[in-house]
Length: 237
Ligand SMILES: Nc1nc2c(ncn2[C@@H]2O[C@H](COP(=O)(O)OP(=O)(O)O)[C@@H](O)[C@H]2O)c(=O)[nH]1
Ligand SMILES: [Mg+2]
Image 1 (cartoon, protein in one colour):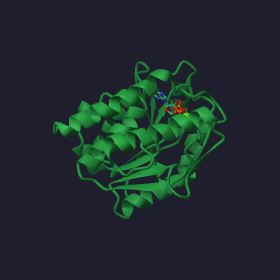
Image 2 (cartoon, protein in one colour; image 1 turned 90 degrees about the horizontal axis):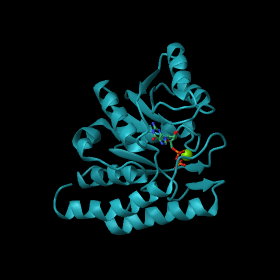
Image 3 (cartoon, helix red, strand yellow; image 1 turned 120 degrees about the vertical axis):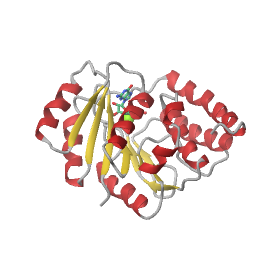
Image 4 (spheres, protein in one colour; image 1 turned 180 degrees about the vertical axis):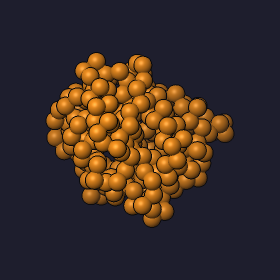
């Protein structure tokens, strides 16, 4: 199996961090927790678990800056550590640890980027309110139309990259922080000629802790998409 690092961003996930790390243990992956100084002590819990669990390490960042910067720091650390595959997933069980091997398999079968996808046949969402469903499906539709790509789920955060994708796309140019980060990384991969596979997943709403989704994250995605298209037209990406 290729050496795989899962980047797991956390902000106030004290109820989820231990069960999540233990659930990932049997998969034979390395897990990099990226904690933005969570006030609820998630970072300390992660440190304590890392001392016990050989496959866990923790990257502490000084402040919460959104998912994008946290992921970028994690990707750089994972690349420096020599990982062949770099995965990203949420630490709230919306992304099922049992689906990780299917994402890895899609990359082993040839995809450069495998996306856990809610919006292909066999995928879906569970226990999500109407509001969240509309924002999510509407967001993917909007981005797909404006960017002119075929990918159905552009905003999901359950993804597996071959290292060459992250080596090639210009990580230093990415400013997106929320859902726009997911759209931007996938779009840059497509623009660079990499193959993307969508793997159906069932996404279920978190049962512990709180979502950090906010209006500003949605607004960022709405404005960032046309800016990305513009950059592509100018040949910048
Ligand atoms: N390090 C870090 N993690 C974050 C930040 N915002 C959200 N997360 C984590 O990213 C994952 C997804 O966030 P979540 O709030 O569940 O977003 P939602 O699934 O769109 O509602 C969870 O593991 C969060 O703890 C952040 O600013 N920094
Ligand atoms: Mg979530």
